[in-house]
Image 1 (cartoon, rainbow, N blue to C red):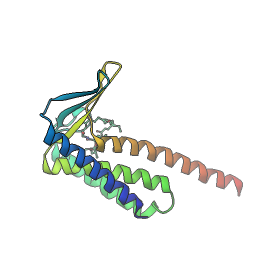
Image 2: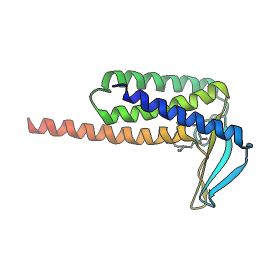
Image 3: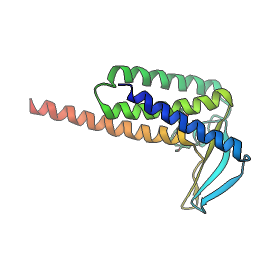
Image 4: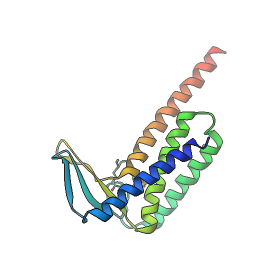
Length: 158
Ligand SMILES: CCC[C@@H]1OC(=O)[C@@H](C)C[C@H](C)CCCCC(=O)CCC[C@@H](CC)/C=C/C=C(\COC)CC[C@@H](O)[C@@H](O)C[C@H](O)CNC1=O
């Protein structure tokens, strides 16, 4: 049952540790090519959400993130026992949401550093928390669809 919170905690620790390294070791704007032309570590800050939307709207972010966190904890308490994968995906999303929440609370901005150039398109620079949020959302959608199908099959059998 508490596995999901352990997953979230590991993601928060990994997210905050990587951001701390970037802040301590790199200048803002500095870029280190890991795979030149494809994957760089670029120290970047974002006062907004994805693609830099809603710059500086911290109160909005606090409200939305609090709602997301409360909703996930409620859902985990209520449904976490039933479906393992739904619980795991919510734990991953929870870790991502808390990771960026800590940045917004203490830095009033989010530290980003994962910089991918895909077919010459420079995808917005993101961080471990964003990756967890994106992977968690996708996993949650898949788990929910599979869960519905499993229930559907059970109905047909009876
Ligand atoms: C990933 C959610 C963004 C994250 O939301 C959060 O914190 C949550 C918990 C709180 C937000 C206030 C509310 C969600 C807003 C939804 C949103 O924004 C649409 C999301 C689409 C998404 C599909 C799922 C695409 C993906 C994008 C990116 C990441 O792809 C890996 C680019 C990230 C870079 O622009 C980077 O600068 C962003 C910066 O780190 C701050 N991050 C956030 O606001």
